Length: 181
Image (cartoon, rainbow, N blue to C red):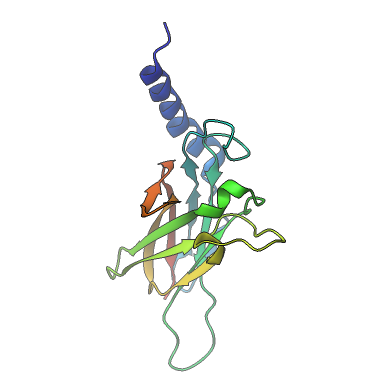
């Protein structure tokens, strides 16, 4: 007998155990700083179930990865505060279903307690004009986090007509980075 609840639970467990461990955890090469090594860790946000003929190309459970890296520091006195650059890795080709979807990156510096959020578009703009809030968003943003370990979660959101945005990611993404002083 088909049991939808058991099937969905099995799929979510498989994704939780399989996707982040095999394809999603992509630590990059450590970059030396004055006192320590810097580690970058990126785990993609996994989208929800896409049902019906109006689904997004690629189907259900699509991963969306946001890469966090230390922002560019200029040589000036006094030095600018340390920053983190959040960038969408491999934006998806445009599809009409993407025109109302975007990412929310919520970050926290574990050393100094600073918090913040940024919204990014995770798809390429088409040649024709597209309306809506997600179309106005960039694919990268700079956050003034300060030095220290920064952790960020990535959530896929969908705009709703006359309602607040809805979270459509089944598993939120995660980025962790140590920002040098």
